Length: 156
Image (cartoon, rainbow, N blue to C red; front, side):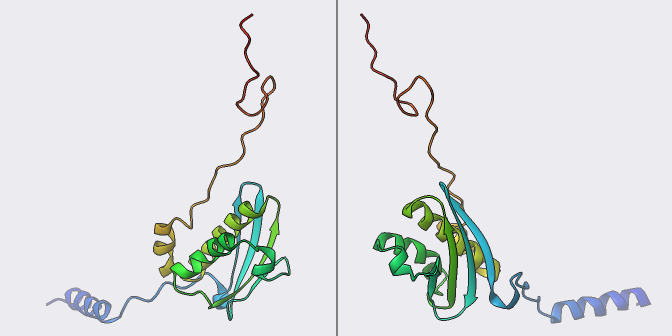
């Protein structure tokens, strides 16, 4: 055996013995700040390790979104990655209505979870939480009553 062959053999042995290092999290200390958008709503979220409390524009989740459907929609990403009470979530919500804000908040939470732990990304992606819903209201055109509704046609 030549010296280059022995070096290659020892290097291969060292490489096979050392386990692959886990991917480092981009988020420092398990916190993440992300943005989510839906319709006209824009939500900025900050996830911090904690007890599962929500602060949305300074209010708890139940006060800001009294509708249970919206509450469930918002919690879905946390339940999917099995961390429903691992993070405190504070969010700044602007624009749009309750449904748009709830969708934007869900997207922002999912993005933050994927940023904190890269292993959660496939589950969130498969559930569709990392996909931005691009649907928005179509603009009204002149000559029409609404975006597509034409005035009644009279032949005579």
